[in-house]
Amino acid sequence: MGREISEKERLDETEFRRRLRDETRCLMGWFKGGEFEHPDTPSIGLELEAWLVDRDGLPASQNLAFLERLDDPHVVPELAAYNFEFNADPARLEGRVFSKMEQDLDGLWAKAETCAATMDLLTLMTGIPATLREPMLNLDAATPSERYRLLNERLFELRGGVPLKIDIDGRDHLELIQTHLMMEAACTSLQVHLMMTQENAARRYNACQIASAPLIAASANSPYLYGQRLWEETRVPAFESAVNAPGQRMGDGRHASRVTFGTAHVRESLMELFLENLDAYDPFLPMVSDTPPEALVHLRLQNGTVWRWNRPIVQPGQTPHLRVENRVMPAGPTVIDIVANTAFCIGLTLHLEQEDALETRLPFETARENFYACARHGYGAECVWLDGRPVNVQALIRDELADQACAALIEAGVDSLEAKHYLEIIKARSRNGQNGAAWQRAHANCHGKDHQKLVLDYIANQKEGRPVHRWQI
Image (cartoon, rainbow, N blue to C red; front, side, top):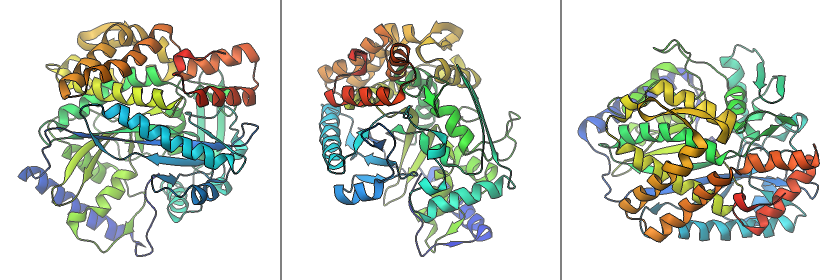
């Protein structure tokens, strides 16, 4: 949920808005002057959120003690005391980049597993743990943090004190009234970063948006929330419901939601999204810092509290750079699945950005409908692909998109055997239809609603390291 609040920052909404306007003008000047980095080879990176659970498979709220014992700068706390997050070092998209990513993540995960074991705990990579129950997520379960306290306080200020109504209709139906945002902590994700140049940023961002539907279908891993079977990727409605603070009404008639797929394709520049941040959203954390405009402290804080499923990122510096953060995929099931999902995300985005007239051939509303259909139904989703072609998304991934993503990675400079290895995992998963959500559903069909057994069996498979399409029940 972002960086901690500094003791040097102060709460002042009027001053925050003024500085946000100044920094937005500064950023606009950078766009007009073409001042962003132009890398020949883009960098990539990822963040991975995970859980601590006890020997019964139940969430364990000991992240600060765990992180103190682990003592690794790559691992940081998250919103709930059950969660932690890995931050991988950025790497250039070339050669055997994904093998190196897998090796690094494997080592870090093994270190975390060993550390957790000394506390009689287990580590878990999943979208939402099947054993999580609503009473476990309240403000007492939040990681001690001024940022998280203010986020919760501000959410209900913006809502005029009105509680959140949770209403998610899936295979089962979940209805709740909540007076805190802690359900957001139920949703643990894989966040993939891809650098952009100023020239390719609009098209690359739109391509990432369009890629999000097949990405979420292939990677779905969150079929349960609070004991109810809901969507294949229940993180999507859960997160959107947990931080529901509607902003201004947009051109399409919808309110600008804090967690959003967006309202339109980018037309010319990512500046459009930063102007939307300024005009359509009230400050969520109006913390003022005495920093120069070119540091973009207030602009980045505002951007960090608009949770687009594909978020534009601007990184200031001597030569600032742009990247897109794809936030649609859940964590897990294994390290090799995570790296394969990352390769698919990047490769498919690179492929789609080369398609002629992409935004015309797949309009924004179609991309949006595809995204929610795939979040709800996973591999069973029926979508509309380029040029209005109706498709089953599982067949589309298996027969076309995995190969197209592979070819795009090779063209970008990734070792050909490397690209084929990780995209074959995506193809194999799409051949037998077993992603994390499908395995969890199959387990429940065999063993009933024994969600503790489900989580412990899941962790046993995770420890073996085989990709999820090869897991047995």
